[in-house]
Image (cartoon, rainbow, N blue to C red; front, side, top):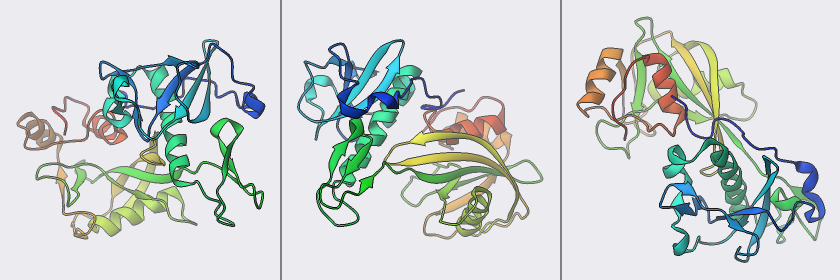
Length: 285
């Protein structure tokens, strides 16, 4: 099982970002409104020509198979383009198009919340084909941010998996634990700290597994496997309402009966679970 957005499929061609060098009549354009993208029948992405594109700020995405791709940012994708959230349709989008779309959505979400200079407060301007904002007053350059977050499947000496449920989730919905990396912290230490804070379980060895860009709005999910050194669970009752250890048999039987609801295939969380489980996990939330 693959998860969405896991491989870059296009050449970002940064050398074409200056002075609109990327802009040619045959550029394929994706209209972006926040995390919403235009679709064809609610699934595959809808690309239009540069002449058909609405007014907006531009992002040059790159080149694939000698074709140039760009995105234009708007407040709202027009209804006639059948807009949908990229996080919802991720599994239905071809990998090469998903690579372009996750690039576009990540940049667009950053622009939405960084329109003013963090140094002097003046309105900043888009530059370098959407990959920089420049302050015309103090000259500061601002670059898109990515927030590193760890997401981890913790197992114990009985090879049980530790899963938690957030307070806003319904009964039966569980996932792997996750949290943001703090300044001055290694990734392994972030895994150990987050697990201890959320469920009171001590973690020893931590092994990197895979990563997933998650531009909703600006995270890079860094997936890990970790080995528990303790078993007792003490939930913080703030971020986690319930946590428990699951055997493979528990997961197989409880997902089959819908007693246990796990993350969808779009998420690296589901992939981590599948790597540990090795068998059939039924259903999704």
